[in-house]
Length: 341
Image (tube, rainbow, N blue to C red):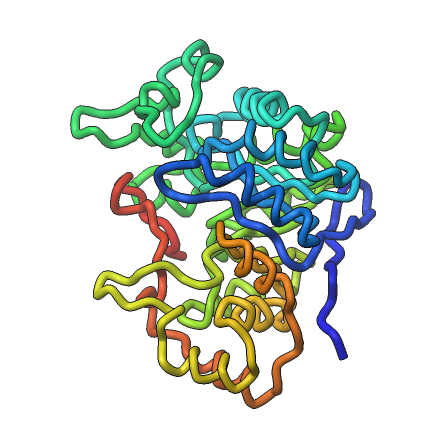
């Protein structure tokens, strides 16, 4: 029995659309010159799901890659996200318009809130002029900084879960309602969130109305299986998309890709490690967003296949206690208490 090629996600008016079960991640720290050629390769190899974000600074490259690939636009599921400095209700459409212009597209298949906090922008004018690249400063991105050089967070516009931890009250609901309007306008087919905790999703669930939460994009891999969130997602029809499905590097230098147990399992199955980890993710009913600039790995990461129950059990049992398995967290840098319920 083969693994699914796509999963249904909820969209406007009780309908569903299909999201391909393997996404191609387009984020990389530093130089972004790889993005166009690698994305062309991915599309020609058969990827039909691109995961992007305004902050990645690759919109133009992705748009050019789509045109150069020869794959019709309607066959590609394109996701992007707004950075927290565009998080006030009046600014979410501005970021979407910037993304669409940069990519040369008329609509997104999915538009996500990148983080559950909202940053104060320098000004509306600064956001209109804002750009992002590997060497763009926070000011050039339109982000207001405090005297310590950290982004100024508008706690009242952030999720109540975050605001309470800072001794005040907040609500992301107005931003969510502004996102819903973008679906009604036809600029995005679906909307969702990223890096939201259980309690933060529960804040939004009563406000789905005719435009539901289609997905929550979170870090998921065997070190961080995120079972509690996945259970909530399944209960409410929210699809899980998984960034960093191969995990990043831990503080002690360890990586999942070099883990002996993972490598032994991959050899047993005659698979690359990335290929096996993507297979595990899809077999759990989630969508991995693996990224590689190497043509051979781009190809193999797409070639998923069913793992035995025994092997799934081994990978399922690799979760680390608490947050020890998490390799992506902007919270300390921004002084924001993410991932706490």
